Image (tube, rainbow, N blue to C red; front, side, top):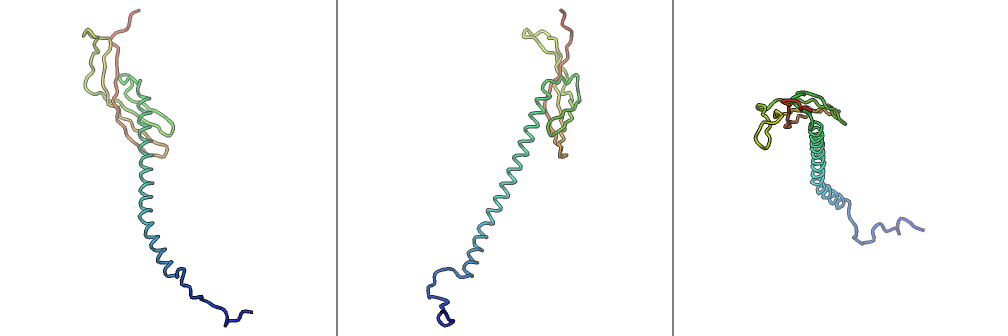
Length: 146
């Protein structure tokens, strides 16, 4: 039977850590993780910025593709709708119209006008972005006779 007199609380072996040593080790470990947490938040911010840029470039490419075949001499304003956005565009002439030429140098059938296209895109979350693209318009100078 064990009595309070024959129980050894300490066997003389000094292996192990004291509470103070464990707390110091924990404090050092926490101090080492502080810069890692800062790097992690910067990483998350950069990923978010990259996603915003990819969204912007994708939208700009989609808008450019939708406006590719528009004759801006006939339509100076318009609206576009897509997945997650709506856009309004306006075409402003740049310079004066020129007559196209045949390879012989003779005047061809079309007048061609360069345009600056301004697009205001509104996302479904209410954010707005403005894009500027070049565009062209054309007008037939005479009809083709059959």
